[in-house]
Length: 126
Image (cartoon, rainbow, N blue to C red; front, side):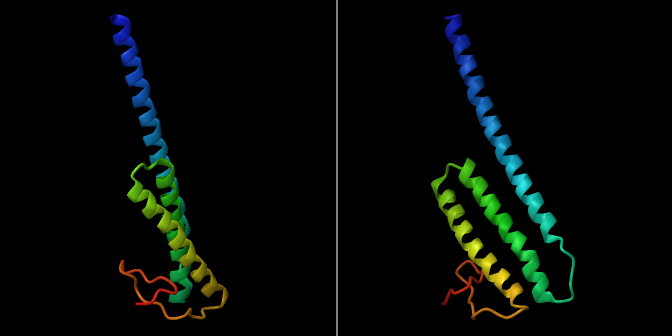
């Protein structure tokens, strides 16, 4: 009987240790993603609001991608995993648009409209 209780205690401890390790891994990965994002966003101002906006938003969007990848690694809720996958696709597309604008010396992309979420996405039409 005591052996069974001891084994049960060891099993519970190993499960809680694994859960704690996963939680710590998640927290560490999220903290790292946010630290990279915030550091990269602090580019300073050039005097050109359009340029500065794009330069700051690119790392902001990359941070969203990095955090979504953490969700895919650690998350279990299929709804959030699908959302994370969508975030990765959309944010990569938006980064490409902003990089293109920066490389074109401020040329504007084709007209965009806000989506249902209120965030304008390149190529979306109402």
